[in-house]
Length: 129
Image (cartoon, rainbow, N blue to C red; front, top):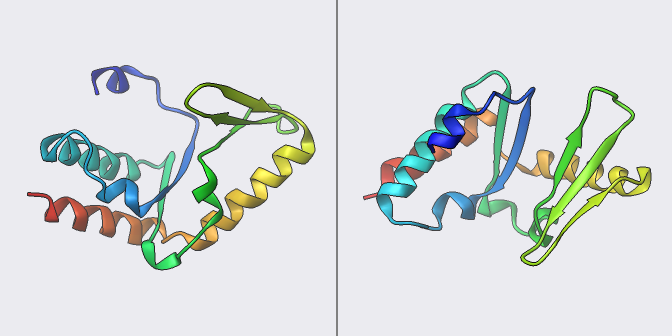
């Protein structure tokens, strides 16, 4: 957490999370409360958008694994970053980036709004004992 506090803020961040990320306890209730509070606080920042795909959405394309779309000042240059337990991969072809961009757009449509997401995070936080 200290390392995160020292970082320069990103230009912008748009994160889409599965509801399981909020509910699966990792590190015990104290750690979970800290993490959820941090997520809730960060979601209020103007340069951060957080959305959660609720369980009620059912299966979604993000279930195949996480990915990051990196955008640079040169708007024609985007890279998709994939991480697995034993390797990582950068995809730079326009076709690959296009497919992941479409997947991201689909996930955004299935996810709760940022306001509903903050309400959900606050509810999960309140339920933690």
